[in-house]
Amino acid sequence: MLNVAVLVSGGGTNLQAIIDAIKAGSITNAQIKVVISNNKDAYALERAKAAGIKELCISPKDFEDRAKFNEALIDAIDKENIDLIVLAGFLVVIPEAMVKKYKNRIINIHPSLIPSFCGKGYYGLKVHEAALARGVKVTGATVHFVDEGTDTGPIIYQKAVEIKEGDTPEVLQRRVMEEAEWKLLPQAIDALANGRVKLG
Image 1 (tube, rainbow, N blue to C red):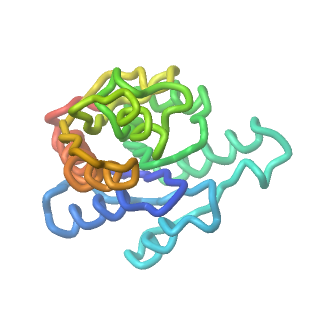
Image 2 (image 1 turned 180 degrees about the vertical axis):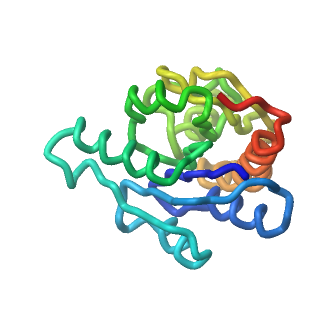
């Protein structure tokens, strides 16, 4: 059984997709042990509570410096015997020590087809604004392993999503979530839990 930690900052729609997929049996051999948010008001924490999953808020604001926050975050994950860390809209830079310790055991979902519209400064609506401003016809989402860079780790899965005439960043964001993110993330977790993609 794969022990999963999900790290979130906001609404937690990707977290909900994982919870639902485990319940529906489309993710097997995996359980969410803990949901961690850097934001005490994140609706994702309510979703975890409703599903009976342990939830924690660990915010950089509650520590005197980033090193202490990093330590607390790594400690919380270590305590749960975690096999896989899933970044599902986590807007805090992952400590390098954690990337090293959990090498090839941290995955992230990014709302574009990497290498397009990724890297520093590309997150949330900004990604979709950039795609529309550039006039691309196809966007999508990517699940990838996390390394020391930003959105530079090995790609696990990608799914394309069509951009339609008249799309706003908000409309496009929703379509990318529904058609790509909420499908890819559960698919990747199931593949990792069942050995179709190698962990670590």
